[in-house]
Image (cartoon, rainbow, N blue to C red; front, top):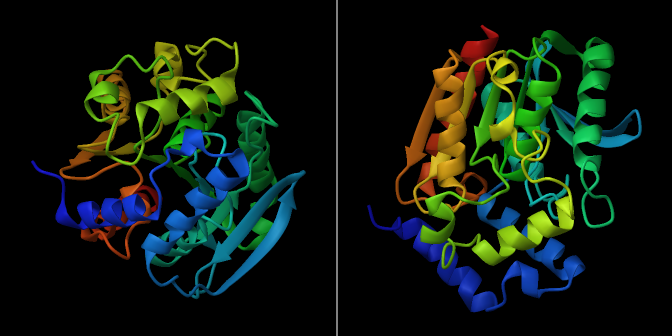
Length: 302
């Protein structure tokens, strides 16, 4: 299918704002530019309340819906190539998830590269998850109904988390996840120019996050985790986009889990690019994806 017209409108706006790729910018400027994508998310949803706190040293932001609790808990791990992204930049996404899934969202502000390289982000996400498991009931969470969701690098970290703590999550929702840092899949080259996330930016992310570490390490690339690890995964939703360079590795992860007997739901959104889930204010398919994610989570929590 052709590029969706709503996505084309987003790309036209970004092109008009500047012709440099993220990897060509100073890192602070790239981080600010990435957080500005939140402007495509539309009006932030109204939640019951929010609170910024520390999960054993890891910054987290909690979002409660307006309904009475206790609520199922969704650990949300933001994207940004392990270098970009923030609690503020993903505030709108976290709010949408809390309201539409009627859950307590714990958004994780993990350490990012290059100041904090692999495996710092993994360690922080695991720390935050264990904190939620230990203390979640004290702030109105039903920790027996715990799930994790993340986009892009956050999908990578979500998958790694589930693999590290088997049996603790009801579900995982992986939005165009980065699962293979060898970048050998055809979609990296097919979609590596002109669709927001470029092959050069992917290379920049991996070089800064991994350095000289093995890109096939299962904490870096969950696609390479052992069969017995992946077979223990909970019900899994994988969302991919037709014009995303990460499309094939996300779909390869879904296929591998399914082959190992995991219940997997996957949809490729035609005409979509990387990061479309964060563009609900301009891209109608982002609303469809939000409904798919929240329906999937509510089914897992039922």
